[in-house]
Structures are given as structure tokens and as C-alpha cells.
Image (tube, rainbow over all chains, first blue to last red; front, side, top):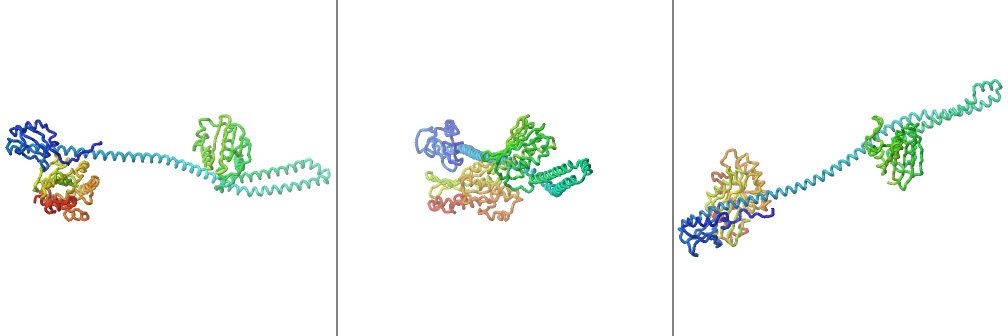
Length: 407
Length: 215
């Protein structure tokens, strides 16, 4: 609303207060009441009704409103009482009229006041609504970010706990096994030297022992026994060495004591992963290592080892019939690239977008957590790298891990 | 601020009776109409509904001529007390030269009185009146009823307030003149400061108040 109401308590003029009545009819009535023509003038000299001849000097009655004279009723022939009565009548009319004007103008002022107040409230509401909307939008986003952080931390924690228990177990086993393996290897070494001495003894015995000894020697096939004895001990010793190495790898791999960053060569990590996974790979796949010259990488070895083990085991599990797993490492610019290619069953296209989702697994309940690739991606991302998967059903899968040398 | 019309030689002073619903504002004006006898006294204009609630306002015009021939006109208004008529209250209150706050002495009306007084203070600021310097008289009305706060209780409660307290029973007319006089005593110095009533029109405070009340 653009108009400004006039103050309801302003002063009114004679014309304004009579504007609601027909002056003609008023004049006719007053003419009858006053017994002839008359004149109605305002206090400012304006003539509202002029029904008689003559100028000044006529008898007149003052018409008051709100204490003040607003006009005069003049008539040359009416009596003073008549004039007074007619003026009173007009005053009544004007009072009624003023009452109406004041009420209506006050009403307009009040309505406009309320309207402006409503508009201000509305504007304030719109503003606060916009503010809350913005807040709620960013709130949702912030909650989602926080949820992601928590989920990621949760997975890392889960994996770390798992690795810690594996590591503790491995450390315990290693400690228990290292002792017996130690004396087994030592004893086997001693036994080998004993066999060497037995062989020297046999040579002399055969030379000076006569026909009877030679016959018995032949019958017992002692030449083969002695030779095979040495070989058996050698094989046993290398077997014991392998046990010792596996135990050491398992312990190192689980990195129960390696949470901090270290500078490691990824080729060593891959070899360790292969050793740990050897049991699951045997008979399923041949591992072909194509390890290039790569610089050492500053990383957290435990999680990184876990990434390669996860990928290796995934590849092994993808084998429906014996195949090959090819592991290639190389440097491309400032990025280390590890590519693990298998000849397994491949991943269906429908499944491919979901393989990194937490708890997504195609394996039977209890066989896989559905966290392997999720945690692997978390780890690689935490190292500033990326992990990509290409797959064709029936041909195999290639997983490429890219890690920046400098972060 | 009072309206000063040089051409018409007229000074119009607006006085407003404010307060909670049914506290006796209209009754105050009706009694003043009966009790005062100034030179000029107009008809009282009331705009009430059938249940005696003031819908818009009541108006009582009073006036007198100064020795210098000027017209001093008082327009006494009441406001509607009900909460819903706040827009009307604001319009009536605007440009007021003085306010009588008519409080209801009944014990049950304490909250209504407080809310209405707060509303007066808020609205005074909204319509551009300086509430710190605005002449205000607080009238505790309905002294004739039972279950009312004692004068001592009222004085204790209002002891920290700067406004004069008057006890009244508008229905019987008691205290009504005194309230109006108390207000004029506060209004006169303000008018005198702006319009030099004493100096230019030869009216000191006593003469001014006497003329206004018709004593």
C-alpha cells in the first residue's frame, strides 16, 4: 500500500464534515425550518449554500465543532432561536460525520500498521527460512562427509585389529617355531657332517675289508643309502629354512610392530605377499613376477602389504581352473605402477561398479568379509594413489595400483 | 508534540488515557466531562461496542482562551485496551503530549497491568515518543472494589518508577480530577519550554491548570 492515511485526529473543515450529505436537500430542509432563504458560510468565508439576497449585517448563528467555530448560518428573516436550533442540527450532523471519518481513518491506519508489520514478519520469516534451508543443506553434506570419515576409520580399525591379531599370533608362532627350527637345522648340519665321515669310513672299509664285507655292502646297497642319506638331510635342511622364512615373512608381513611409515621397496612387499599366499596359490595358479627397477617408497608397509595380499588372494580365488597370475611393477613418471593380471573368471559388468562397496561380496557367507577391496582402496587413497580394475568375463581381471613416489 | 497553529492562533494538546482492557479509561473521560468546567467543553465522542468495549477511541475536547486570545485545546483520547487492537492503540498514541496510564487495582489484574504498561512503552518508542521524557501519570483505578492491592503494596511495587501515582475510583469520580491535574502539571513545563506560554501568553502553571480545569 502506497498511500499514507491522514491523521485520524486532524482538524476537519465545514465542507468536509458536510460532504456526506446532499447540500441541496439540506438547503431545502433548512429553508423550510428557517422560514425562508439562508446562507451557510464557512469560517474561512467560503459560501456553501446561498439561498438569500443581501450581504453582511444579517442575523447569524455560529456553527461549532470540536470547540471551534467552523461556519455561520445567516438568514435575514429567521429568529435567533430558529437560527440557533438549525445550527445545532448542523452541529449534530457534523459530530456524527466526524465520528465516522475519525473511525474510518483510524481503521485504515491500524490496518496499514498491521499490514506493514505482517510484511516485516513475512520478510523476516523468508530470510530465516532461507538461512535454515542453507544450514540444512550444508548440514546434510557435512553429516555425509563425517559418516564417510567414520566408516573409513571403522574399516581401517577393523582391518588393523584383524592384522594385529594375526600379527600377534604370527609373532607367537614364530617365537615357538624358531627354537625347534633352530636346533633342527643345527642338528641336520651336524648330521650332514656325520654322513660325510661315514662316507670316508665306507671307502676305507670297502678297500681293506675283503670279499665278505664287499658282499654284505652290496647286499645292503650301502652306496645308495649313504648318497641318499646326504641328499635327504640337504632337502630337510632347505625345508627347515623355508619354514623359518615363512614364519619370518608372516611376522614381518602382519607388521604388528610396523604402524609407522617406512621406506620400503614394493618388490619386496610383493615377494612377501607371494610367500604368505603360497599355500592358497599352490595348484591354482603360477605366479609370474615381472618386477622392474623401482625406487623405494615411503609408506606404511603393513597396510600396503595387505593390499597386495588381498589382490593376490582375489586373483587366486578367481581361478576356476589352473592359470597364471602376472605381477608387473614399473615406474611411470613419478608414479609407481603395480599391475596384477589373472586369467580367472572375470567380474560381470553388473557387479563391477559395486566391488569397492563396503561389505559387498560374491562369496558365500563366512568366506569373505566384503571388506578386502574397500580397505585396499582406503589404503591406496590414504597414500595418495588410485586403484583401477578392468575385467572381462571368462578372460580375467587386471588390477592396477598407482602410487605417487613423492607426496 | 503539541500542534501549534500560528494562523489560527491555536495550540492543540493531545492527552491519551492508556491501560489494560476494562480498567476504566472511558469512565475517566466521562467523569472529566461532568466534573471539569473550562471555558470550552465539547461533547464526548464515544465509539464503543455493545458490550462497553471501546472499539476505536473516545474523545473529549476541552479548551480555553488565553489572555492573549489564543485557543488552547485539549483533546483527551482513550485507546482500546484489548490486545488485538494494537494497531489502533499505536495510531491513537502517536503525537501524544501526555499519557495517563489507568491500571486496574484488583489483585487479579497485575499481569494485565504489567503487559499493558510494557505495551505502552513499546508503542511509545514505535511511534517516535521519548518515553523517558514523556509526561506520564499512573492511576490505580477501582479503589471502590474489594480484593484490591493496598495503597502501600502499590507504592512499594512502583517505588522505583519515576511516574506519579494517583489512586482513583472513576465510577464515583474520586481521583479523576487529581489524575488530570497531575498530568497537566507535567505537561505544562514541556509546553512552556517550546511555546513560552508564561512569557508570551501571561499564564503561569497554576493559571494554565486552573483554566484547563475550570476552577
